[in-house]
Image 1 (cartoon, rainbow, N blue to C red):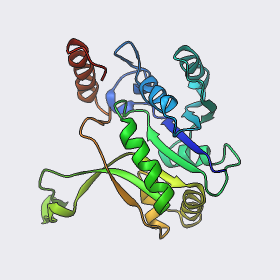
Image 2 (cartoon, one colour):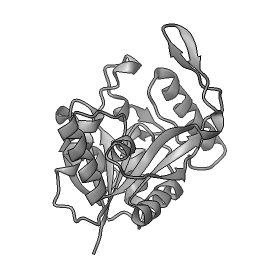
Image 3 (cartoon, rainbow, N blue to C red):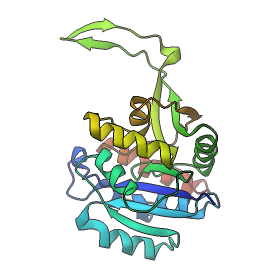
Image 4 (cartoon, rainbow, N blue to C red):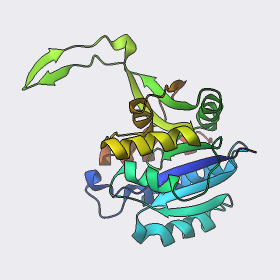
Length: 235
């Protein structure tokens, strides 16, 4: 019987924030940033097991967080790579997955992902083979070349990528193997799947599913939690 694995990618150093502490371990509403997505994935009946990917020097720390917050579905903590793509590939190599297993990749730096979005990705990946969350781009986007505007694409077909992104194992394995053979790099797994010739189903993303990349993002996340707490609801 096919199983569904939630893979939390937390191998980044957070260098763009200018902090010594990696962003996934910064405090957010009384627990580390990464604990938010770990707890969400752990709570979903649709997820059978959770795999976390971390820099080698933080693997023990991540296990302690999993223990502290009762992440009883944690199946493995995998050493990350030098890039996001390599970290995802390490997760692919960590277990003997079945061809029809569903793998849901999610960035630890997106703490406010919802169960609705994760489950929608699971359902779409099971039906279509590959799926990812996207939001419509609201601002006009321009292509710039040598300091000048070279094109202004039509906004109605432009979407911003988020995670989670879900795949049948056979598809994401082929996509990563193809990228390795051909020397292809991409900023997410959906990009690798498309480069390998697969189609990716769009799942509706969420405005609150922000990614903590900069100090400003982190402050905004903390403010959102504070507001939710004052209003008497969980973020």
